[in-house]
Image 1 (cartoon, rainbow, N blue to C red):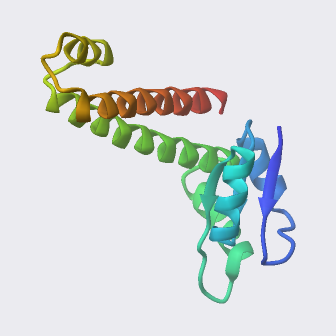
Image 2: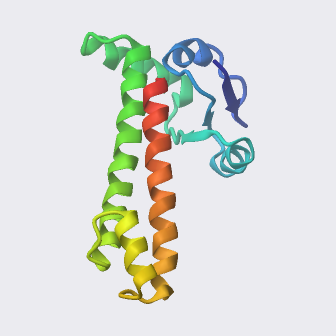
Image 3: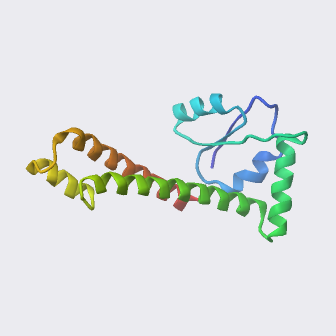
Length: 152
């Protein structure tokens, strides 16, 4: 298990102990969103950005997570883990909607059917071919998210 932290906000003492047990893959947790997104792309990591405001800052937010998790009788690690899973499920849901919208344009139920329609000429190659590639990419991303959820 590896935890990569990119921050311009000073050391995040205690943070790794709190969140690392909840994660089983390389995950980037960051304070500086732009710097972190670039780093995440280079390292092929999931990127979760924290924007925490107020006097308490980041460590105060972690304290709040611990308090809220206790309120619901869940460990902080499980609380964070379930939040990460919920976030990934939402991303997956939005990708499914996008996939269905593209396929519906061609009255196709799956990639193979769209590919067949393009091959037989009942759908024009442009933009159908580009949409076919997009659906394949979406399906791959959906599968990757499912694998990541399974790894948690």
